[in-house]
Length: 79
Image 1 (tube, one colour):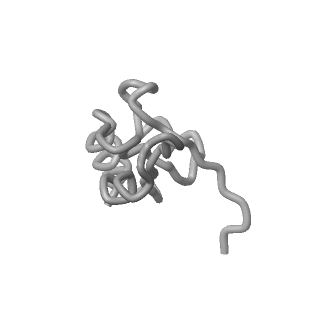
Image 2 (tube, rainbow, N blue to C red):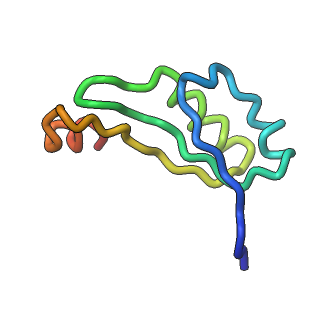
């Protein structure tokens, strides 16, 4: 049973991530930005999502919420 794991949050701001290096450093999981607002799709999402799977890393996707944008539209955009 895992009681403590370290993870990272990544998006297009980190540019190209070396996922083998990240995994080998002891990072246990990644939370990957997928969308923002009601129209932005992170251009590095597909790369990060695919590469974390290749190195067998736990992963999750997240939406960056914008408070002045329709929340229902944002939820639909993320889905």
